[in-house]
Length: 301
Ligand code: GRG
Image (cartoon, rainbow, N blue to C red; front, side):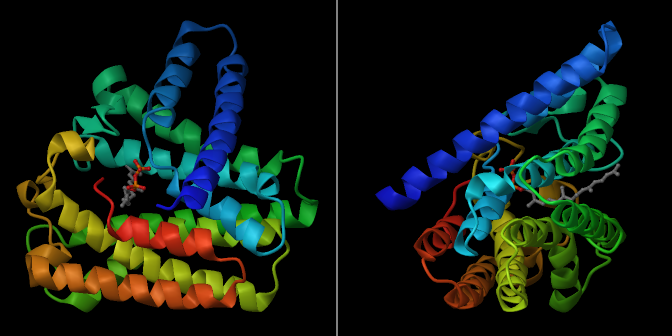
């Protein structure tokens, strides 16, 4: 990353960290005095405060900026997207899903707090994501309604959940074509990235052309991002990833790498990244997004 990108990245990370801390305080007080609700809020914070890359909230704030808005105006919507993303990671790690012990460099939520609290922490994040968007002080009622609708659409059965369902149906060799795999990637991983970009656009009242370019960008970024994830799973250590390396093979998952091999996977990730970069040409002052997109292709976790 160049210096300018790095500075803006830090600025956005700071903005989202502050917002998530406020949400943490609210969750601790909203549950009342009870020890049980304290434990649930602690479980939420365990996952939310760990070392996630914050790519989705950063995209939301930056798309707001490149569409002419103040990045701060998108911070509530950005926090909502990060909360839904974090809930999906907590539930994805549960024994009934991937059964992973580590996430974001520490014990997964259910390993630290027990399975029931892992489930409830995810539920809390999902529920309060809608609250964060609905209670935003920087957005109009119309913007809030549209953002809430997008969160439901992209997190739901036509989006991320639908992708997870497809992923489960592909276990033990159930997926034999790249096109089916990419359809699943577009939902499981792409949907919440698209959601992030779109809520950023909505926060700036962006026009139809800008919104459609943002969706085209996110569609391609989502696929590049998930193929890169497949590559990292077989090339990086558990320490570097902050979650178990080699878990795709262990769980007999079909991935781009298992279907077509590492070289093809690298070429495909680069190809989808180029398509994403092309979509960014619709935006003036797109240097940060261009640099971030290239950085995501070369990331190590
Ligand atoms: C309802 C029981 C139940 C489970 C739902 C929704 C769901 C399970 C799973 C969602 C699918 C999922 C986890 C997709 C993974 C997408 C992905 C590549 C995540 C990693 O994103 P990063 O690298 O993670 O941005 P950080 O930790 O940096 O935020």
